[in-house]
Image (cartoon, rainbow, N blue to C red; front, side, top):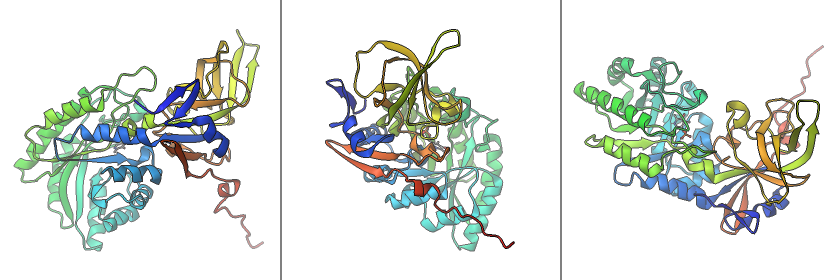
Length: 422
Ligand SMILES: *Cc1c(COP(=O)(O)O)cnc(C)c1O
């Protein structure tokens, strides 16, 4: 359930007409509903209210500090994967004691920054990372709190590019090798072993892979306890899917129920790292029709709608062949036509939607690309020297720009025409 609805044929975000925002802000832009963000965060978080838990929002899915600060106010923490994300989380006011640092390639500088900031846990993904963290912590005369991210070899049954929990993926430490590492870490002067973590993939539409993972983690945790290694935190990662098209993902409350049942008897604080399930359907991207054209010459005429947003603004269709539903902001009763909705970028892969049955549109019509809140703006680039678009948040009858549209000047910021000695 979200707060993007039609009233008298006009798309509204909460109580604001999307077209009214476009008049002020220009196009394209990302648009988030505060009520939806709040609702989705709470729907997820409240499912776990019976147990000790921390909901650490996956910053990489949507990292605007306006949104992070909203979640912080709702009691949320952050799951980060870079020093940049740590900076965002701290700037947004997220309690460092609710920040988890994941990722396979943390640099020395990033480890130092995490330690300095007093984050809750580093999710360590290799033996070399463990050694580096131990050394950095020693230098700083600190003890680094860690969990190992184990790879449980469970098939999440999702897109290959967003599967992370299979033995062949680069993530985590194979669960069968993890015991030796735990024993090694437990003896290290500057390492404080506190938890176990995993993340098996994204956009999961089944609960069973999560349950299978949790069972493996439980068995392993018991083994650790036998070896005298206490586990305080169990981090189950993110990954609950959403509906883009006709997927039927579990309701967050169903997911929570299954997890809590499985956790029965284990004395741990549960950590969750949801991203997509909270923000995905709380945001849309609004774009304007620039041209329509028809290419003849093939077997049948091919119709294109060229809009002002491209693969640099919303990458998912090009990158994963992902489906985003696309709708007109002002409903029309024109006949349907099968069209490709494409951007202005010089790449054949630059499309937002293919073979869509779409009402005949014309120059200047606004389109809404739905379910764009997660991995939308955060994956945007300046490719083709396109300034990144504005981000806007609506609350009730008000709206506010939460990230200004980039300018031409910002495109070349930091660039220098070199002057070498002849
Ligand atoms: C990407 C990621 C998440 C969030 O995944 P969603 O599918 O957006 O919930 C959580 N944890 C880690 C370690 C990740 O890499």
